[in-house]
Amino acid sequence: MKFLSLSPHSAGVEEGAPPPDRILSGDPKFRTWNIEERPGGLYAGVWESTPGKWRIDYDEWEYCRILSGVSVIAEDGGEMRRVSAGDSFIIRPGFKGTWEVLETTRKEYVIRL
Image 1 (tube, rainbow, N blue to C red):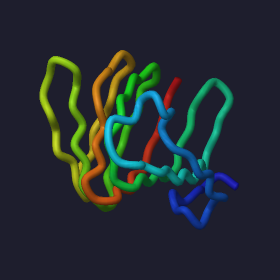
Image 2 (image 1 turned 60 degrees about the vertical axis):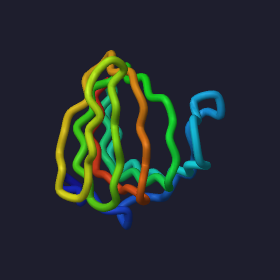
Image 3 (image 1 turned 30 degrees about the vertical axis):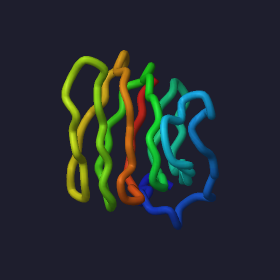
Image 4 (image 1 turned 90 degrees about the vertical axis):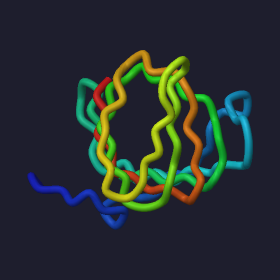
């Protein structure tokens, strides 16, 4: 198959959470539908998180498009950015800061290691 839909119906769900030592508030829980995984470290799918706040530290490049919910992403020493349905953005390797889910957030992602 050469055409894939970025839909949770296209893959099984994986459940998870941030590592306990990174959680700053709440009890965030993740659901991830990893729809595409290619050799060399390319991933695409859908991710969802319940409310909470945790530290993030990116080694990878990631494109995101928020499908629903509201989150605040803050870079250490930089700006806080509120993201909600329809917002698209890129997080580059080396980004350090926090991700806070205010309302359960679902995003499409493409990750390149």
